[in-house]
Length: 151
Image 1: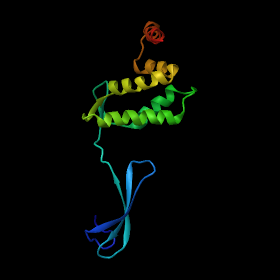
Image 2: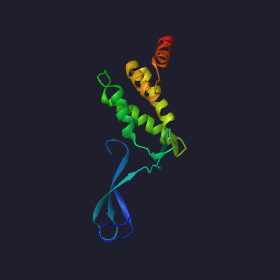
Image 3: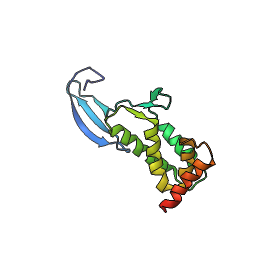
Image 4: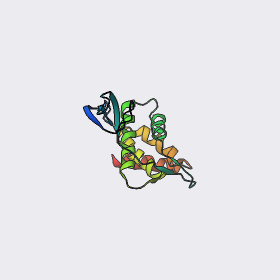
């Protein structure tokens, strides 16, 4: 690690701590040349993920779009924001852990619905109605009947 004061390449780690969110490590270092101390942060490098949309266009993955969709589906429902954040993080982790760098909106939608269904059925139906783009009342009723049959 290069010293920000003198540019010397060697330093020693004086103290290491995990960040509060657990996603990085904070290290206090001391330059072996000038003895000044500085702080560095280590984080896991994540590869960019590209989302392939229904019209075959591509755009960068944005976790906020998943979270916003969940918030809209759960509006005026007894679902905490913390739970929605947890679901979003879980889906993001699944996508990051897959070795594929491209993911379809269909796959993301299915992951969201898998998590919404046991959480809140009304929110699930709201999300599914937008995601699956029900054309008429019969397709909507078909989805509702599937939920009722599973009970």
